[in-house]
Amino acid sequence: MNKSFQLRTLIAEIPGLLTCGKDAVISGLTCDSRRLKSGELFFALPGVNCDGHEYIAAALDAGAAALVVAREPEKKYPVPVVVAANVRLAMAQIAQRFYGNPTADIPVIGVTGTNGKTTISYLLESILKAAGYAPAVFGTVDYRFADHQIPASHTTPESIELLSLITDFRAAGADAIIMEVSSHALAQYRVDGICFDTAIFTNLTPEHLDYHGNMDAYFASKARLFELVASDAGVVNLDDSYGVWLKEKYPEALGFSRGEKTVVGIQNLVSDASGQKLTLNIESETFTLRSSLVGDFNVSNILAAVAAAHRLGIDSATICRGIEQAPQVPGRLERVDNSRGVLALVDYAHTSDALSQVLGGLAGIKASRRITLVGCGGDRDPKKRPLMAAAAVKASDLTILTSDNPRTEDPLLILEQMRQGALETAEQELALAQASAGVPGFVIIPDRRKAIEFAVGLAQEGDLLLVAGKGHEDYQILGTTRVHFDDREELRRAFAGEMPEKESDDEVRS
Image (cartoon, rainbow, N blue to C red; front, side, top):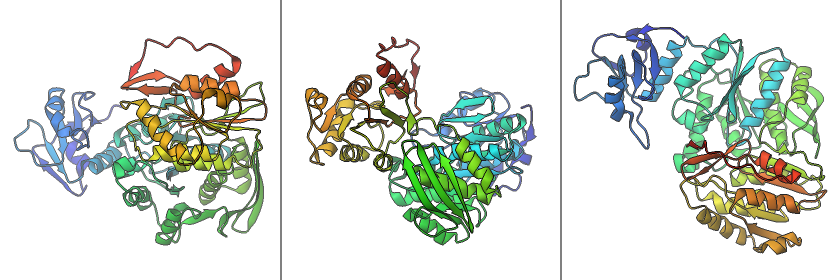
């Protein structure tokens, strides 16, 4: 993209900005002094762990044409300075102008909530394709359009990167956007340069409390998405108490429910190992659809996608076709085929509520033995660790506690916290020989590869094996080093009886 703007044009009529110095020609935007190119506008973002103001000198050395800062400078700089009451908000607003407001004339659907965002985004992508759209998707797995696929650095990237990518996808032919919107992104104004047509709220359960502090602050961040759309543009889950609150605040929003009488609801459901068969109602219309998604909790995700598509004016036949054609969602109860007759599933569930929902959703599927393997990440909310272990133990014949992404924490200390939660359920900790003999309880195997091998070694025809926590991730973070590790690959290898490949020396620092 070869564009340049006068600084004063980019900031004209944006409230809360004060300019010091003359005008400048801006050829690009960045908030990373390490990537700054001469002529770009540098945003000094205040942060939790570091402050962008500390990198102003580096930005100037790299050729910054102007600065956006949070406080009036104590000294005179050789370039114009814009003082913003909220630098992140100003960055989103300026980026929107710089990139030509690329979401102004196309449908944009934002999906927020603790669980379900990725599955809903895949369902909507399939529905919009069935309706003739060419949608781009931004989410936890990747940012993608057609043959363009970029691994996701965050669920929702910074506003500059987000709007730049949307501009590129629009140039390649995208005419609709589906976006998972994280609480961090909303709290940090990353999406304030996006023109949303529809906002979906899925549910809210404890997560990211190490960042938000409490559930009220967490919910306030999620609810900000509804401030960015028209009052009748919301789609809310009325089976969730926070969704009910949103509906009360935005009465024109479209509600969906599995049990309550709503505009979009369910009349009949058959859920088994092959997926779902649902009879749905939209207003006065009734229709039946099938989905290959396993776990009856996915019914809420289907309803959310149906409601959003209906709000966009897509007819029910197209909605059904889109859902029935939807592909397997990576790492969301993703099946791993094997010749042993074991229903082996990999899922991203990494909170106690998400894990409980997944296990509860699988409860209706017949299984000789239920084996669950789960770990907890390091440098994240430690309160969820005993809760996750307890959730797994309560719903399983055998639970294998193992390592996840320990990061800079001692994985054995993380496992000890999980062990305490497991013991509180009154289930017994087993020796490996007892677990192999079929005794119910839990075992601890710190090495995740060995834990998966042990689980596969026990699993027999008719068993259900769930490997939870990492889902689509193809890495494990040990200390500050990221090494390749994919639960799906490990399961396939273990079922095939293959030896693990030698670990690559090309490890990427996290």
